[in-house]
Amino acid sequence: MRLVVVGGVAAGLSAASRARRLDASLEILVLEKGSRIAYGACGLPYYIEGQAESLDQLTLHTPEFFRRERRIEVRTQTEVAAVRHAQRELQLVSGERIRYDKLVWAAGARPVHPSRPDDRTFVLRTDADAARLQAFLSERKPKTAAVVGGGYIGLEMVTALRARGLSVTLYEAKGHYLHRDDDWLTSRITGLLERCRVAVKLRTPVSSPAQMGEDVIIWAAGMQPNTALIADAGAATGRTGALQVTDRCETTLPGVWAAGDCAETNHLVSNRPVWLPLGATANKMGRVAGANAAGARERFPGIAGTSIVRVAGLGVAFTGLNSAQARLDGFRPASAVIDAQDRPRYFRGRKLQVELVADLGTRRLLGATIAGDEGVRGAINVAATALAARMTLDDFLSLDLAYTPPYAAATDPLLIAARQLARELR
Ligand SMILES: Cc1cc2nc3c(=O)[nH]c(=O)nc-3n(C[C@H](O)[C@H](O)[C@H](O)COP(=O)(O)OP(=O)(O)OC[C@H]3O[C@@H](n4cnc5c(N)ncnc54)[C@H](O)[C@@H]3O)c2cc1C
Image 1 (tube, protein in one colour):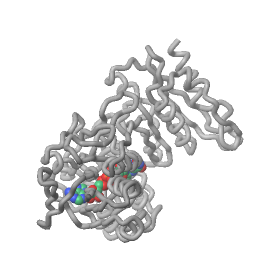
Image 2: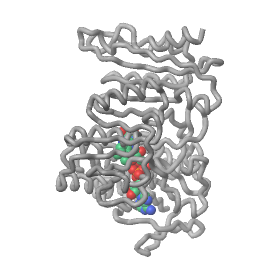
Image 3: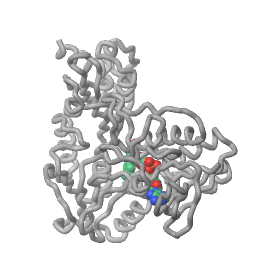
Image 4: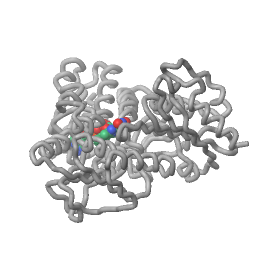
């Protein structure tokens, strides 16, 4: 029995590894069109910033490791050109045909490219993209940069390019960042970027580098799931454009599973299919897809869209829905935003801003947005756990959270926000 996995990064290699653990006899082949596998694309902006000295530091494993330690065959520079599911066969760009009994589609996503790109315009998705950008920055020594897109990749690149001393302009078509239209967050990020001498141009759509005068342009204006080949073979895509999958990561084609950035997943709060391409989700979905391809019956319940990004030193994190998203999903949201200290002032406490959203009718917690320093990660994870447990605001208010001055405030900022929200719900 042969399992073929298309895509050799987070979802694909998690699937292959888990399938191997559950079935020692399976023949497992991973096909990857790039020349590097198992690397953290999440680290690419930090490689450009200078935190990692080489792309090798972002790479977890080599094909040799998988062959030796897991008996998984990984072929790099091997691109699939077509899926012939009726024959259970993949056609490679080279013309070679590869037979499969079971298939995991983990082909990820690709950046949206601008119209008429030129040689100073870069996207950032793969190690090769990062290598090209790094070479351009080192050789041409640009002084001015434009970043197009105020999503997390755009904001990370603004931070990285400022750290390298470039003068940076950020162009964003909408009036906010990170797909979150919360005014307090927009003004905090704008204020911070302006203090870092970034020229911020919100509500400024650009469609082509041709209009732009900067020396280097980072195009970070969105992504699309890689679904075309498997959709041509008959797998259904959902309303988001990504592959439709069940909670067992099955596509609509029998014997074909999908995981990671190419697939939809269930949102734990709205209970609707969403496309939120994130690394940790890809790893977890990949494990479930691989287990089921190896004959298990595991479930992937979904995600709350929990994510965190560093913007010019500020940690910004989300989980669940903000008010606008909650309204679109049919809830009646109420929210409260508070400013608090993450620790006592005498322990260099820093400002932590917390917004909690709950449903007016059921008092169920729907989401949290948090901005601040180191405490952001812990706080968002508590909120994410509360969402997974479907807590009401009242359950949340009675959480027993830790306190000691070096690490925490006497009243946790999350609870201050919850009390404020409870007052508003009254
Ligand atoms: C700059 C950047 C920063 C990020 N930061 C974060 C972060 O901080 N936190 C977070 O959670 N997520 C982050 N992400 C997202 C995270 O990297 C992705 O969610 C994760 O890589 C998805 O893994 P995947 O295996 O589904 O897809 P991918 O990593 O896209 O891997 C899919 C692989 O499939 C291969 N492939 C595609 N088509 C074919 C074909 N026809 N034949 C053969 N191979 C093919 C591709 O070459 C690719 O290597 C970041 C992404 C980027 C680009």
